[in-house]
Amino acid sequence: MMCYYRLFVLLALSSFVVESRHLKGNSYELSSFHRSRTNATIEPKIWAVLVAGSNGFVNYRHQADICHAYQILKNGGVEDENIIVFMYDDIAFDIENSRPGVMINKPDGDNVYKGVPKDYTGEDVNVDNLLAAILGNKTGVRGGSGKVVESGPNDHIFIYYADHGGAGILGMPSGVDLTAKDLMNTLKKKHAAKSYKSMVIYVEACESGSIFEGLLPKNMNIYAITAANANESSWGTYCPGEFPSPPSDLDTCLGDLFSISWMEDSDIHDLRKETLDQQYQLVRRRTAVDDMVGASHVMQYGNKTIAKQFVFNYMGANPKNDYYSPSSDDDSSLTTTPSIVSQHDATLLHFWHKFRNAPEGSPKKTEAHKQLMDGLSLRKHIDESVNQIISVVFGQEKVPEMLNTVQSAGNPLVHDWDCFKMLVNSFKKQCGSTSRYEMKYSRAFANMCNAGVHINHATLAITQACSTNSPPP
Image 1 (cartoon, helix red, strand yellow):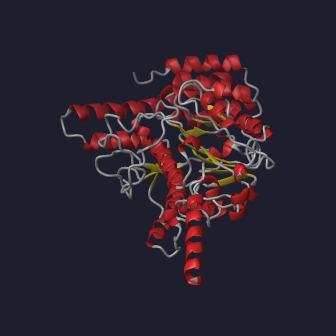
Image 2 (cartoon, rainbow, N blue to C red; image 1 turned 60 degrees about the vertical axis):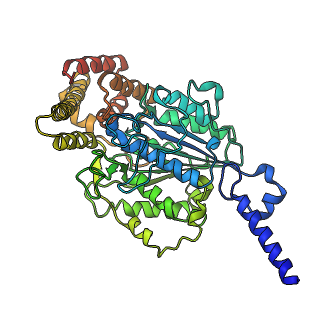
Image 3 (tube, rainbow, N blue to C red; image 1 turned 180 degrees about the horizontal axis):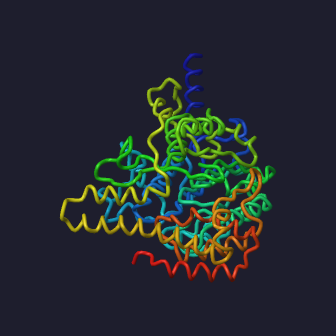
């Protein structure tokens, strides 16, 4: 009889533990078994903000990254009401997508688009809505679902951004781009409001280290990881013609190297037992910076003691991974670095493969050839425009200095952020493109501001140059 009693008690406790995995905002309890029984009202929640900052089928990979991140959080038990998704949502049903309603983030991957909330789409994916959502400011958002981060002092926040970037800026598909300073001001307000316990930020973008370099204090309980340092590109992967390649019916890159590295790790590992630092180290190794020419350095910023925490505090944990073993066959893929393509070249690669794969003499061939030529012409137009802007403002002899000067490690990109914001957004408006190739020159505008440029003189030069150098129609 005593054996039956013990069995009953064990079954009851097991049932309780299973139920505890489905707490609001998280898949596993973030505190002890005892605390969940006696003080469930203050149980911390996970809040997540996922941002794809681009649009257009050529940028398929960014929205695929964000959709994949959503699936990790959802499988980890984080509720939809705690996940805020910003994406233009123009890929899944784009005419170029041979798989309507389906998006994949790796060649043999599952459909990551399924079930993703459409919180802010189209023109609602903009800087004002993003910063208001992070702050929890419901009256500050316009359009969309109205969902914001309503976190409390015990809660954990995860922010993940994927798109094109440049020195000091992160791209947005609508309106102005997000500057490092505006993001930092928002994070400081969030910290001052005591509305989170700790925050983790992952950023996939070129020169993404410049978003935090010399700007993110260590005393705000924020830990950030970036795909690149302040001066280098990040990389697309699973691209056509590379290894491994996407399926033959998809002629675009499916993911980004930094992003697929942390997400494919999260797909199989027990995130209750893996620390943020362990994930960082794995991602850093997978980018194989020591083995590849031109690869980027994955960086850490802010309060690095947070890296000792387990990943599940910010992403939940999939119960299917409870019995993950480091010797698992799936783990071998995490040590293999796929071929990479510069973010700046991914658009041309897409057009080239469209052209190469189109039937000879077909309208598709003609259209693809025009897109490829227009892409090349646009790059030439942007290159010449920047050269002209600097020459008009400072003289031709200053062009190399403005293009190439880099701030020393630990220092922010620019001193006058208002000047920088004015110039980069003016340049985006006048010379911008879906490929966001123009973002590679944001450092030049920072250097112009550091050199004391007259803003009105510079914006006039931008307008003249961008209208003079005959961009593609």
